[in-house]
Figure 1 (cartoon, rainbow, N blue to C red):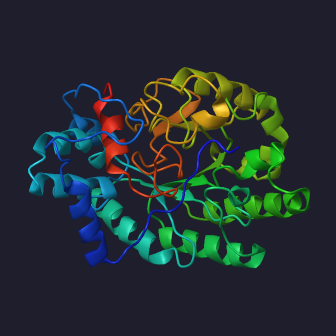
Figure 2 (figure 1 turned 180 degrees about the vertical axis):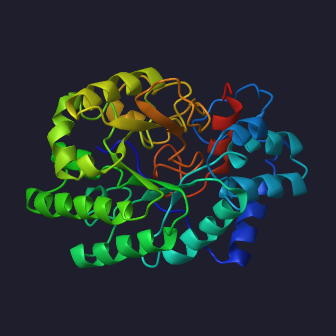
Length: 346
């Protein structure tokens, strides 16, 4: 079972999106904001996202689902909830670039990043046979299509400063046996080629996804596969994408991988790990677990010489899949987002 499901967010036409936001903004019958299914209520904490965003080098998307939700709730008079949700809306989130033509979304983000002097944070998630046909199934139809897509992805970044988390799950799914053996060699080749293509951009940093501490128990099992996938030429690897493992667990795990990879650095997804993983069966803990919280805000000041950044790669508030009453993977779920923000400590 993968650590979490994810999918590029929907690009619904503007009128449809507006209607969805208005519906999401409608208060419950009691007139209060109701937590989503399985999400316990929590006492709101005073948010302070603006200062955290100013300390981060990464670009904040003013048109994210969270930002639109804030506007919709303010228009509906849900000002308290809107203020809490700014813990997400006012912070930098990774853009999961859609399959097909990656150009329009990257160009939009690049313009914003260039105008503000910030760094783009992007996730490339389009490898063939993605997610082994599970919640986030899809990806490029074949190797040729993937090469074309990643080429366009890189071309549209140009010389803008960017951090790319490359293909969440792709390496770990080889190790855990989820990806069929006949696809292994091709996947390694495509990942390695993707690293090389992205690194032709002088200001692009690339981090190969390496799963999380609860997925591949022995971190040394990742060393050879990561090198096959091009780690030697990448800037490092990424941990905890879309998962809930604590910072301490991820740092310890990453340090062991780093030791086996000649000191490679790494980044950690802290988007939803503020309260760590849900206790119990880890095969059930990855999908929309209740009671979780936002983690450390995105920053490149980690205090750990091996950790280049804490990032919000998973976009908090996007569903992991149709579990615990959630919508389809990658779909914005405002009640779940609000719960994460309410429980946040920073």
